[in-house]
Length: 253
Ligand code: NDP
Image 1: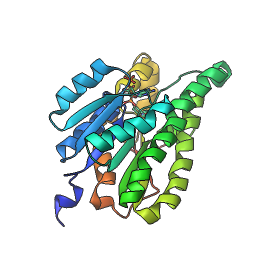
Image 2 (image 1 turned 90 degrees about the horizontal axis):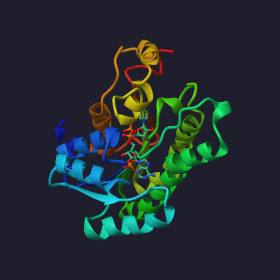
Image 3 (image 1 turned 135 degrees about the vertical axis):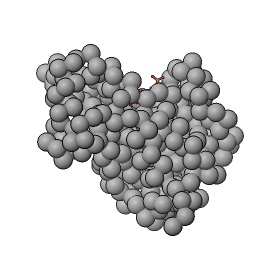
Image 4 (image 1 turned 60 degrees about the horizontal axis):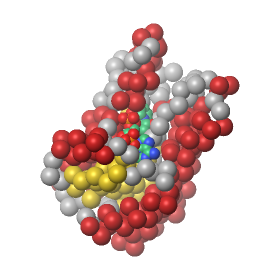
C-alpha cells in the first residue's frame, strides 16, 4: 500500500474554529499532509497568529458561525477565491458548564445555535457544491459527552448527541453523491476549552484521568491525525461513523 492514499495534496479544507485548540491541531495536520486550509473564527487577531503558525497554505476568514445569513457568502467567497471545498470540519463549538437546574433556556439555546444549528447550516451550504462535484468529506467534531452521561454539561451534551443524528441522516442522503459524513468524538484533550473547563479544578482533573483507560489526556495532534485519515482517500469507503479518539475512555466506564 502506498502512503499516498493518506495525502491531502490538492485538497482544500475549511475548518471552523481553526484558530485555537483542536481546530488548530486539525489545520496543522491538514497543511502538513499537503492540503490548503481556510480557518474561521470570530477573533481576527487569533486567526492571524494561527495562519502565521500554519504557513503559506493557510488562510483565514473572520466569521461568526451563528450569523447564519453570512454562511452563503462565506462559502461563495472561498469557492471563488481559493477553490472548491473538498473537506469541511465543523469544529467551532462552545461549552457551558452548569447543573441542569441552573441552565437557563438562553444558555441552552446559545449552545444549540453554535454547536448544532450552525453546523447543519454550513454543512448544507458546502454540500451543494460537493454534491455537484460528486466528492467531499464532512467531519463533525462531536464529543464523548455526546456518547455517555457526564454531569454539568446538559446543553453541550444535547448538542453533541444530536450531531449523531446529523451524521446518520446526512450519510444516507449524501452517500450516493460520494460525499462522506463522519464525526470524531474527542475525549479529554489538552486544548483551550479543556484547560478552561477542567484545569481550574484539580480534584476533577484527577477524577477524569482515572476514567481514561490510557491514563492520560489526548492532544490536538491526536485529533488532527484522525481528521486527516477520515478526509483522505484511505477512508473513501468510510461514512456514517462516529470515531471516538479518547484513549479508551468511552469503554472504561
Ligand atoms: P476552543 O475554545 O479552543 O475552540 C473553539 C473554537 O471555536 C475557537 O477557535 C472559537 O474561536 C471558535 N468558535 C466558538 N464560537 C464560534 C462562533 N460562534 N463562530 C465561529 N467560531 C466560533 O476549544 P476546543 O479546541 O477544545 O474545542 C473545539 C471543538 O472540540 C469543540 O466543538 C468542542 O466541543 C470539541 N471538543 C473538545 C474537547 C476537549 O477536551 N477540548 C472534548 C470533546 C470535544 P472564536 O472564539 O475566535 O470565535
